[in-house]
Image 1 (cartoon, rainbow, N blue to C red):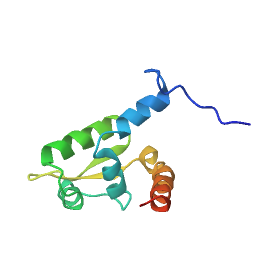
Image 2 (image 1 turned 90 degrees about the horizontal axis):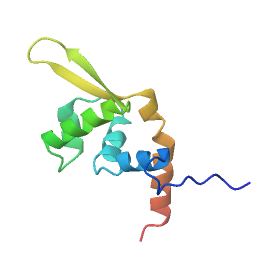
Image 3 (image 1 turned 90 degrees about the vertical axis):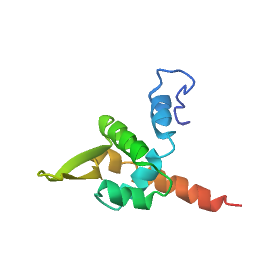
Length: 109
């Protein structure tokens, strides 16, 4: 039996919507970074050379809105400290991303 191939050319296709979300340059890299566990924004910036604070904040907020990342307040008094972690939904991407890494390693060069 052939797998069902969604019509990703249709704007209403769930697969297309997911691909568009992950097409943002930093989202997949943030997921990779958070696979190691919860991290504060400063840690994420050090692990992701080239990302600006503004773009990191926007990326994390978008991923939080999509249910991929959760924001936790670690210290509530000023100065406030927060950390970000993958949600259960975000952690489901571990295997698909590992498959992409394996494919890339196999076809490098």
